[in-house]
Length: 355
Ligand code: 13P
Ligand code: SF4
Image (tube, rainbow, N blue to C red; front, side, top):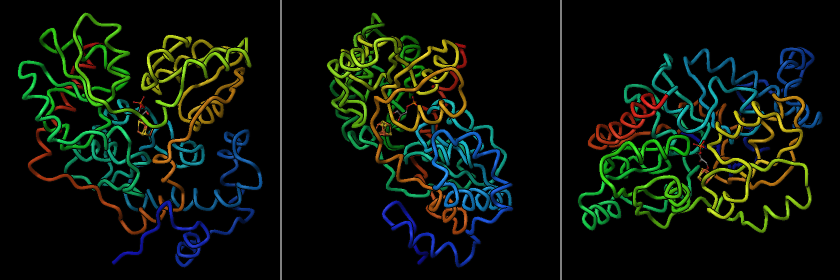
């Protein structure tokens, strides 16, 4: 059996295993070759940490070419992944669309399991790897295929719009998927006055405020965003009176009502880059503002974030190990691939029409 390096492997042990095959010393040559990347992230990664990251970044970037692999990374990945090794970065919708375009034979997903499954659905012939398959999501684990069948039985004429933060088995029982960037367009675009929108109760409630349709939802929530409260936003406003505050629509509606802008992770990034507020608080996962701060000048990023423990299961050590060993491979049962893929493709199709 292939030895596993994952987020619970102590970093020293992981490095010792990797050092059998890969030179992880921080030489002058490594320092020089990685200098452009360090320049980009130096406001967010301490100089003392770079000797640990730089050799891994170089080895990953070499190995991904050798193995004909592409790295897709979500906006919540750490700066060393986002700026150091990713070929494509984005929100869930962008990653799903990009996954349909890649030419490489292997996809390494730096993100959570449902994202890797989506890549597999759209590329069943390719090898899709996730460096730690336990990178889950509280929304994806909140609902099962049986739950969807029960809802369908209760509301037989209502179409089912399912957030991509779900398992492939749930997507397979869905009419069309959505992400936080296209939720309103998808709900408005499906037939009927009543829509089942699962599993995020807050995304559903936030969407319900903008549509005439009746929305029936599920009791799921994102463990990172559900903890933000309107009182937190009031505190942030008092602490940073001149800052703009923006949030992800997985936050409860009273939080969304209190902020200056709400949108998907890509929506928030675009908003900051377009509006260029002198100060901003991104009420979402912490790595996001680090990643945007590393590529945006003239904006001060203030803290008001939570960490997603699932996203943080992915690190440079387990990405290198994943490429080295071809583990952990993401598979989807044959009978689920076609219907789940159809729900994702319908979403991509409907999003294009809305462009
Ligand atoms: P985005 O689609 O906005 O990237 O959101 C994904 C996610 O998991 C947010 O918590
Ligand atoms: Fe899931 Fe929330 Fe983590 Fe996004 S931030 S992956 S919704 S738990």
